[in-house]
Length: 251
Ligand SMILES: Cc1ncc(COP(=O)(O)O)c(C=O)c1O
Image (tube, rainbow, N blue to C red):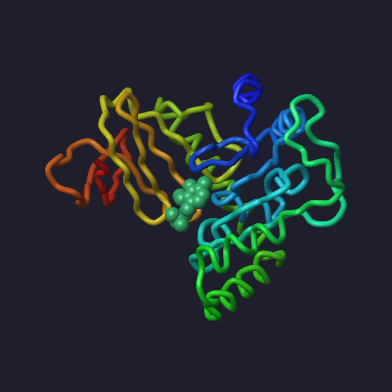
């Protein structure tokens, strides 16, 4: 990543992902961003509930901008939130390859606010804002922390069960609520995206991995499907696990 960043010198370096079951190395991202004078942004959509419950490392310690959906592990209504730094800058950026404008204060507020409204969003959805306020109040409670600890424990238990059945998990396990199960050994290929609540299967032409988020009923996997249908339900069994999944093909 550092090599690519030095070659391309992006103005913004983005970390975060949809199916990464390990901790993010934010410190390294920060170092690289500082080196090239880039803004560091994290999309913590999938892990924001864990971040709120302090059940994983926090991107806020390192990033200038943090975005999240509000309807994944954060357990709120469908929506998005953007956090940004304001006030005096914490560090000198762009020591080597500067994009830095040399200013001493962050200037994200106006740009982000303008990009949201009027650029992309109309009037506020007060019902969603109220629901998000409730969700954020809930994630600050000891009950939510206990819930998140259980979610992680469940993910660990599922990882151990799969590993015991000789399934290959990408990275060999999980630090959070996600498992990435490599199904190439089952001969699965194709461009498929599968979702059932918080269970996803995604694939590239050459690989097929199943990403499981353990904050809902774990379910998974695939064997027989009709490629002509655009979407359908699958019932199948892999290594002794039974699953029912809705599959949608993306062309
Ligand atoms: C990292 C990341 N950010 C944002 C989103 C957007 O979420 P949604 O499509 O539910 O709005 C997703 C979707 O899975 C995601 O994986």
